[in-house]
Amino acid sequence: MAFPAGFGWGAATAAYQVEGGWDADGKGPCVWDTFTHQGGERVFKNQTGDVACGSYTLWEEDLKCIKQLGLTHYRFSLSWSRLLPDGTTGFINQKGIDYYNKIIDDLLRNGVTPIVTLYHFDLPQALEDQGGWLSEAIIERFDKYAQFCFSTFGDRVKQWITINEPNILSLMAYELGKFPPGVPHIGTGGYQAAHNMIKAHARSWHSYDSLFRKQQKGMVSLAIFAGWLEPADPNSVSDQEAAKRAITFHFDFFAKPIFIDGDYPEVVKSQIASMSKKQGYPSSRLPEFTEEEKKMIKGTADFFAVHYYTSRLAKYQENKKGELGFLQDAEIEFFPDPSWENVDWIYVVPWGIRKVLKYIKDTYNNPIIYITENGFPQRDPTSLDDTHRWEHFRQTFQELFKAIQLDKVNLQVYCAWSLLDNFEWNQGYSMRFGLFHVDFENPARPRVPYTSAKEYAKIIKNNGLEGHP
Image 1 (spheres, rainbow, N blue to C red):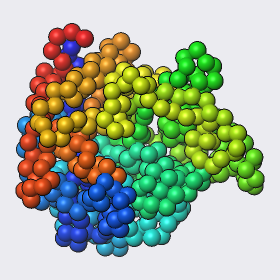
Image 2 (cartoon, rainbow, N blue to C red):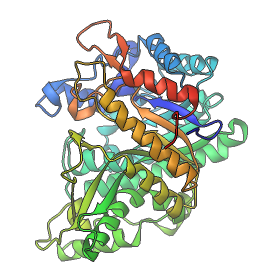
Image 3 (cartoon, rainbow, N blue to C red):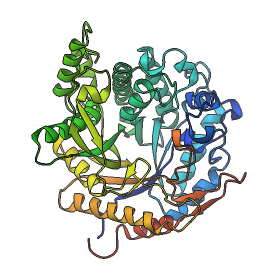
Image 4 (tube, rainbow, N blue to C red):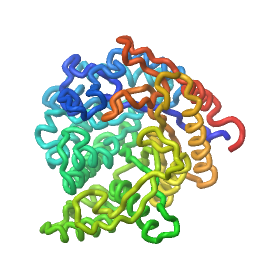
């Protein structure tokens, strides 16, 4: 079961989740610093990313893990407020530049390709104070930050992700208030934030295109979270439509404007407009793109970056009472199949990843695809033997192999989440996704490979699974 020659095998991390050094060497506060320091049990046991895996001072240890696996690619994110403490280029923190230069140079010296995310949920607090993603001013700020990163690191970095999971971020931060700034805006905030994220991404892509591409010859995209949805009752037309609508609302919402035509899917626009009207709003709660903006947004990605973790069943749920909310607008409810195995929110459905890849191929004109995150949490955090978890990975690789061989999907890179056990947002350190175990009680934060790390290293060495699917 050999994968195509030159297939990329990677692992991923994100700045706030691994770095620590929250106020070291001139770093400005980000929204997760503020949010976790406020306490209030919004994060498991009020844990914080103040130290996390200590990667800010322990990069050499991370590099050892990367070399031990034999990775061809490593995806990490830049801390916006470590580079630009107040979010603007008014003050540039050289110590931050030095840190990321070392990571990039060490990776290249070891034959590892960096995939760099500009922004992975950790907005500088100074920009959140000015309205964050709910304010249109953020578009300009993000573009300036992106240009700063392209000009500082783009001579060596050729694969860029602008925004990590805008569909999760807009929902969790600005609709539900579960992520910082922690204020829910049900039915409105998520759409406003998403609208600004799409425009910010597009602006920064154009900046790369016009100012840097000719010299740097890199690629720019954004990473969209995808869950697969199947109809709860496969024989019910309304459930079939609900499953399609669920994919459209959470996935195509971002992908269609960027990859196809610069605008939201029709069903999204019509559902939200008709709900808004029923609720007495003078216009739709979903903002509109101008014709000029549609032209600006269309075609602003050089490859398709997707994250897959899990799947759900979808059912039609009529919004009789005209309630506000994202699911209410889509008129869906979703839930797992009771037969699926799970750890917390992750239900193990390896075949879902093949369906997602085929969907992207068929809907988005057969693009180059990178899976920039996929993984499973360790069931027993006290044991390094995670054979059970490795089986989930193995089944996933079989599905990827089928997607490439049978469905002819143009998948070129796979990144496991994550290189290290780390700070998993609201779950703190209670969910362990690492290929390497990190002891968070030990100040040295030792990294020790799980069985999965050793098995993944074999896959990378063989460029695929041994034997037949």
